Image (cartoon, rainbow, N blue to C red):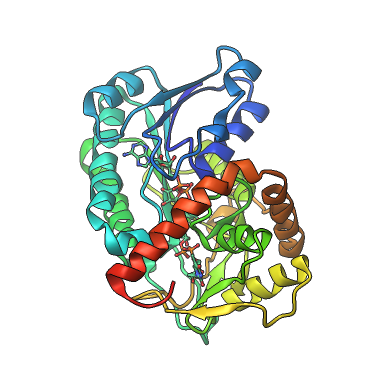
Length: 340
Ligand code: NAD
Ligand code: DAU
């Protein structure tokens, strides 16, 4: 099977490429990645030698219709991870999100339709907006779309494009909407690696607002195993919600990290809240469980400790990315005010 993986040099995509090459000897992978600030070429280093003839990296944008057409022409399957993915950045630079997440997705859909490749679209639970803090309600595939940020609105638009191409242009496609991922190789602009890398450097965690917002954490390897389950067993045109019943407040996550680093529970700072901050995400993953998928990383404390160990052992992977991300947070303070 020949697959094109867009965004394969980023967090989830690179973990997907690594596990796919290790576990599926019949698969040849072409990564198409623009190598934006969010990518780290080290995520894929060594793979061409470790898997001769089964891996290549093409540097380019999913908005480049000629390049996309050429790559998809030789593929059986496209797995589409590429995106601008950080909510905070979408508040200050929304147009980049529309270009990549909306236009780039449409370019890929055209190529997959032309060449008859199966298309798997990686999306997010944020397309549904948020849930009340004090409730047990969860997102389901029939929850109405109600995105809050330019990022989530652009992902919602991309989901609608996939459905339109399935219905009106005969594309063979599946969609999965996953909750918050954690694990190795996540950019240090994001919540968990920002706090881990800060703690390694001796800084206090930075908690937006009161810290009571809830995220439904899933290990990146569980997400990627679920993606293959959908590709193998999912129904064309259908949406699958991926989650591992991992709801935690941000304060609970910070407290767990402080425990790992041996600091008291109150060793953190409250900073200015994110405008439009979604309160709570929670996934009903029964459509995935019906396909036979189960999460393996069911012990969040153990998964978090392993993630801390990975960042502790790979400072060269994150130091300059952390520096750049913190510079962007300082620039956002200048643009939007507050203390981030
Ligand atoms: P990431 O920011 O770590 O990686 C994104 C990758 O896409 C980078 O390698 C970047 O270089 C590449 N990219 C950006 N613009 C591109 C373009 N125009 N052309 C080609 N490549 C481009 O993101 P991530 O956290 O790994 O997320 C991957 C996907 O999963 C995204 O679609 C995101 O919406 C979705 N998702 C993420 C999470 C999460 O918790 N991180 C949860 C659910 C869904
Ligand atoms: O739900 C899936 C989504 O999860 C993905 O679609 C996004 O690509 C991914 O970035 C993530 O979005 P969030 O906005 O939930 O993730 P983030 O890591 O930015 O923030 C997680 C929570 O932590 C959120 O409530 C904001 C808060 N936060 C974040 C940062 C960076 C802090 O309290 N302090 C911080 O420094």
